[in-house]
Image 1 (tube, rainbow, N blue to C red):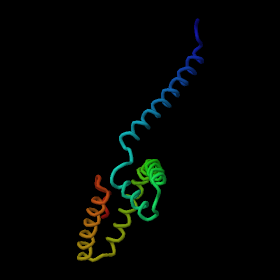
Image 2: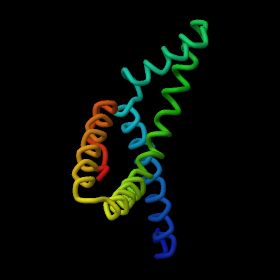
Image 3: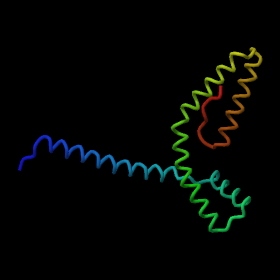
Image 4: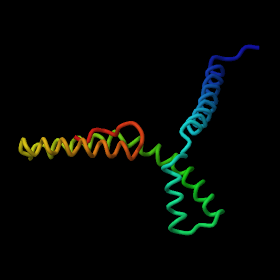
Length: 132
């Protein structure tokens, strides 16, 4: 039995589509496994909410699950906007730099470095974009 070139092309496209969906789902699951939103930062948020709101154990667990689930999506959004944020910060700093005296520029550079280090320490991860 022979298939027409058009049918073969259609089958190839459908196969590629199915393979793409399967690989996308597998990749998403792998990413979520290795980037599971747990750890001290999220635990502190849940503990703070518990302290302020006096959550029941059931509520605390529900809040923990909500925070973990939403954190994955929030991080994905942040990752897509980080380049634009970096560009805006760099543009802002360049504009500020133009109105400063040489002495003020040195102080501004020092201030920018301190803010950079403080932010990196709070995040506990790789350094954020330069603020100057």
